[in-house]
Image (cartoon, rainbow, N blue to C red; front, side):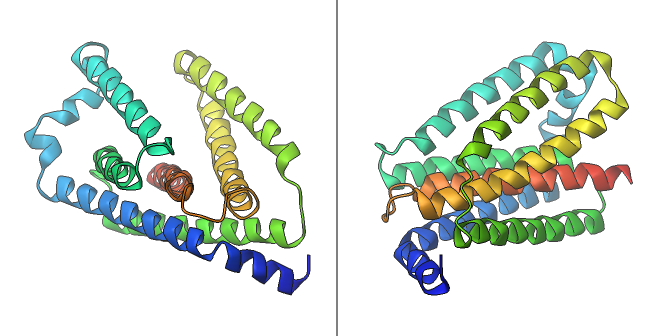
Length: 233
């Protein structure tokens, strides 16, 4: 693909890309704002949420709350990805989803130095932009990623199985391997998502929220992995 053809392809998806990244930015701001509010107003402490992340309480009331949260998040995800639901409803549900993720991030960040959080945020966006550029290059050089999507799916399934087994084994080396494998998988997914948006998404906004949702989860996954790694250093 020559440069002119590549530019024309991006121009054709201009409105879609604008919609995706505008939606993504809005959701990230919502998540950051809700996280900031929760931490600075001691919501976790005042509502006794912190005690439910300890193993002592996890298997009772904490476990039940976790199951309820998983069910709620699954329902919200289904609505967000359902193209038959109106754009405004999906956007509103996405905002609710982002607020709940803000609560989750606050659990990760609480007790962490601001310097570490800021470094993790900076590195997250550097990595995301880098993988975004790599994804665009796969389009420019006409690299077919479809054969690799199945491989990544198998790797993710393998990671999930190993993670479940390691809950009982509690191997530190296995945890390191899992973290590295997850990190590489997430980076690969950014490339695949970018390639799909340009090559497979229709030239309208029907899949705008789908694209923003994929990028959103990938960015938060990178941030979470970086934050955990920097906390261990």
